Amino acid sequence: MTECFDCDNCKESLYGRKYIQMDNGPYCIPCYDAHFANTCDECKELIGHDCRELYYEDRHYHEHCFRCFRCDRSLADEPFTCQGEELLCNDCYCSEFSSKCIACEKTVMPGSRKLEYNGQTWHEHCFICSSCQQPIGSRSFIPDKTDYYCVPCYESKFAPRCTRCKKTLTKGGVTYRDEPWHKECFVCTGCKTPLAGQQFTSQDDNPYCIKCFGNLYAKKCSACTKPITGFGGGKYVSFEDRHWHHNCFNCTRCNTSLVGKGFIPDNDEILCGDCSSDL
Image (cartoon, rainbow, N blue to C red; front, side):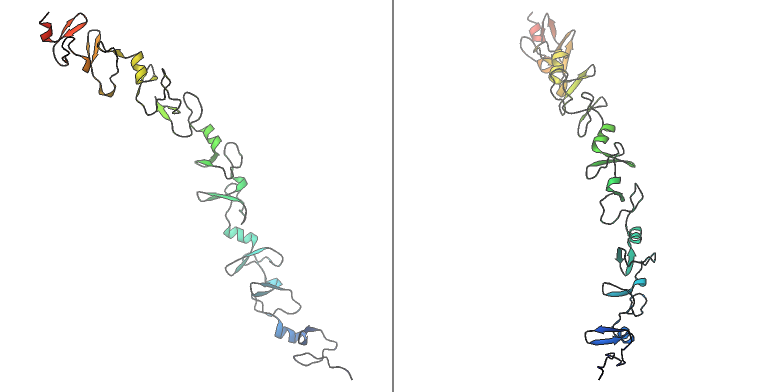
């Protein structure tokens, strides 16, 4: 007696017919497709047993239905990205959602190394110094209109140079006679003491500290012989070829101040009226 070999669903004989074996028994092709085939998420048709089926995030597709939403390119064997409900090939995704390098105008691929500045994007190797043409990478840079410079090139090209040592000034400094100086280079012509933040004066365009200027060029007080610089609100009195600090302009004998008063010169002495009457 011949053993029965029928479809587990419709009970029709499977002798001489194609069938698919399942755990609970064999099925003819129509019954298999009706009971076990998945529905394509794109065309809503059953994915038959003879179709290549693709599966992505709980969704099933015919091979020919698994395509880029924008360019209709097959994604069956291509890398792709899901943007919302849309499946996109890498080219369409990059064109739509990735930025373009401002230098080479090519797409900056997701995950690649890039630099962003002022709303613009560069490939890391495209962001180069406008002077030396070397990639700036993660180093500091200085923008100048539409150009970008590494710090050494910018300093060499644009930074002011110290009037004394001719090296670039990168921070701070002193301006004297409309010329830039390093603070440590701006010193007294006489004693070489730094003048930044100190009172100073000049002689023949050369800067001097108060002490050196007084010793070298200032008038000397006829009384105390110290320089009369006039700094700090100091006042002095001159008579003929002699000069006195205000507080030194006193009667030679009684030491009374003669500032604003009459006086009598007597050789090297200056006398008040009372002392001159004794002559």
